[in-house]
Image 1 (cartoon, chains in turn brown, red):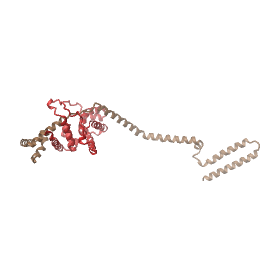
Image 2 (cartoon, helix red, strand yellow):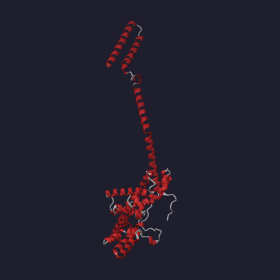
Image 3 (tube, helix red, strand yellow):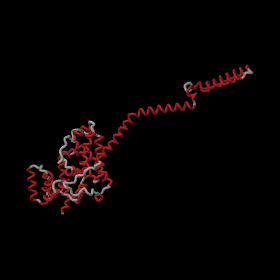
Image 4 (cartoon, rainbow over the protein chains, first blue to last red):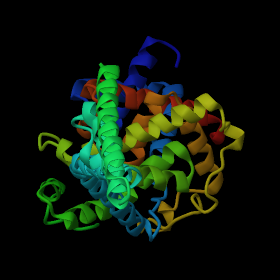
Length: 176
Length: 191
């Protein structure tokens, strides 16, 4: 390119080659190319490059392209389905898990200490009293077995009852 | 010359959006070669090009409802593939994994092919083909893309304008400048 004319002419080459110039500019390019060997060379090389590009071999996708793609889509769909299931049932599953955990915890508690779990808990202040009542009942059983000294046994029973009542009072007051 | 399909791409994508997966397979069959051909010109690796085109179709599959009938399906899918290819190319250039001397082209890509226009139309030889590919690779990115779209894919200026989201006038001037740049780079072949 030698001057501004050449620069202008080169800018028109694509339109010139595609026949999309106005007749006035086309005539100008024709005239310039007829007299400027440099621009003529550039234009001829340009045409040659364009031809080469248009004749580039067309590449083809491999024969298993579509099947590979479809298997990827299958995997994608399965993942999507599982994700949907997961999200939809997440709350339910969480609820079931908590419920199961509670049941197991209660079960273990009952297994370790069945009586206090069933009877106790609610009226815990009376736990000591109940235990002492059991002890009194045991003492009473001892009295029934004894057949020789009823009076003494009765006294002992009374004492035991009094003691157990005192203990109950102590336990209750101790808790308070 | 292949016959024009009776069902348009836009009708197929509409059917696919309506739940017809066979329409998607038909679109894959229509575009897979064109897109592999397109993406390969950026990456120069057939396996990578196929992977990228697979990714393009997966994007279409997952985002089918993103397509609006205001655009041609072809420009939409070329935009997706082009964005993926250019992004990959930029990554590679940043990593400098590929230098020009390391660039290898498929051995049989540039063997002469009969285009069906007669023996005089067999214009390629392996040497020139590789030189042209290297020259395209060395072009600045906007020129590279526009040469591939216009001169290899032979898309219309209008479609290129849509794909690249630039005015038609810019497309034309960029094509001209890219061609002149290529001609300048390759002028030594004539000597």
